[in-house]
Image (cartoon, rainbow, N blue to C red; front, top):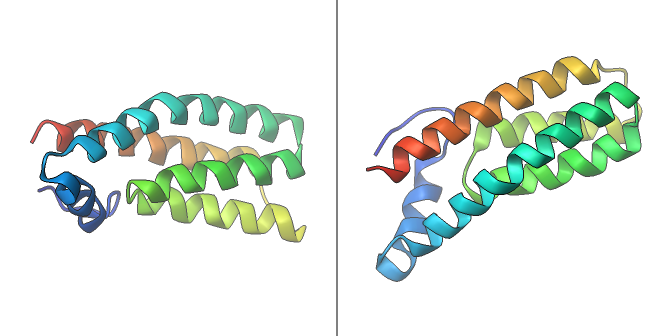
Length: 117
């Protein structure tokens, strides 16, 4: 199994082991691949609109999606953005969302590779 800082391979292994056939991992991955691109578009729009409350809620949902598959790097970035948005601290929303988008796309690529092994 691939080991890197994008995906917690223990989470992947656990998902694959449930039922011993990988069906749960495949279902969770399919949902991730379907829902994350839509969430990323929403994040970008909210960042451009400077809708901090909406951004906090949206990034919280994305963080949950990432955590469900062990996408630790993206989940950590989502957590940081959510914290800043909810506490009223200064941050550059478009820049932070850009990082999350990059990490999410890299995670999707890694999941495709893991799915083929």
